[in-house]
Length: 227
Image (cartoon, rainbow, N blue to C red; front, side, top):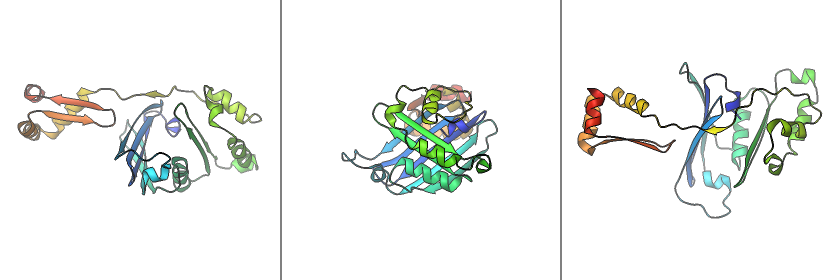
């Protein structure tokens, strides 16, 4: 939902660090809704453990990045709330200048989110509009979202509202194998440092935890890289 608000080469990255069984949650999303993510956990929690106990104490970091210019903005807040929904709602209340409303649903078969943000001077145009749409949004259930198209769902939840819908991108997993980028990274480290790793370990191994890709370079590959 935050990714859909990005423009052009924008990307949003969410990172939750905690002291509980789940130590790290990371996901990012581009403006085209290309997503990827990972979770790092210590051990399986007992059945019935609530989200807050899984995460423990920690912080949420949200990074907004312009991949074309390399500029980025990051904000961090402590983990406040008993669920991811409440944690993200707390972030929105701390970092956004205007009120926002968030609903998140998930089970083993489906996931859905609804994010509403109040625009500047909205009360001047529709004094009770914000209260009205948030009341209607609170009626949404996960079962209603299964196999539902976004526009059909919006008109069902907000039947009396006039809506303008922007271009919809299909959400897709995107984490390509990119050896050329890793080679550039190693060249940036310099020949001396890379050859020192090679001498110590017999090969150079780079692991991309986010995408679960592993890149291996033997002595011949390193020699060609710096040749």
